[in-house]
Image 1 (cartoon, rainbow, N blue to C red):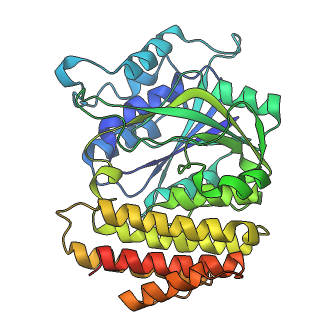
Image 2: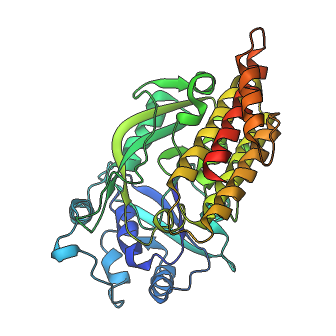
Image 3: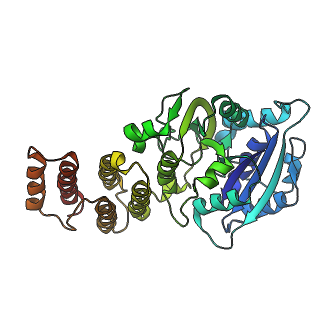
Length: 391
């Protein structure tokens, strides 16, 4: 059995299609765990209550379960995205990789008393799951009909500890720029990749999403891959932790995860507002994982560079209308600086021009170790960025 864990928070407008895409799978043995993260939206609560009334979802009963609930019309100009059409067509065809075992989805709905974020919702779902394998989905996205079958067969064929697959964005709004907020795995395809090689070359450039992969439940638990609760950016440090703690990955370019883009997404609303300061907390979690691993020596300098580059990117791109924008950037600087100090890089909280020039000069001095040169480089560059964005 494969368990799919879906944290749900006020996404009722999209939840029906997400669930349908799981019932439309060609892989026949599935468990769906919907984890309600203290939703308040009336539609979401009605749908969750309807799903709670059944034990098994099938192509024959999926529409009947929510038939009494009025759903909003989402299609712009009455035209459905091709991804929604594909899911509906697959439901009608009722195709299974095992003709004598049609797809059945055992469904469970769990409720969190308080809002704890998607990370803890996934943790709750994993602990409650009974399948041998795990996948994660956001409650407004879709699985391509053959995704789970393809990922499962790839894992059996390659022996990979984690199988990653491709994705693309889609939208009900034809005017949406689907390149914005795009996510991809930056890995060589169709090859078993030892994680130790990835760590040495590109630990911070693999990708940043907890969805988009299949792994065994036992691996998730044994390697302690639970996500940080009550935070955002939890996907980013999860990927680093996953690479640090597993043996190998296999990336298949099968385009199986379909990611819905819409205006009310957290990424669209908050990531470039005041909550961007949480990026610094994510980097601190990442540093803790790296320092606790056996790869600290290989990964330290890359981690320093990643911290600096991420501060530069988000400070540059934070929305102009962010309330107290200057204060937000200064707080982000302080949190990123703390992550760097955890890596042994000494930083001034308010670096002056003289401080910047001094460390730049030391960085250029011959005969220094690579680690010492990196420390001075980081101090000089963060000072430069502080003077650019925080003053």
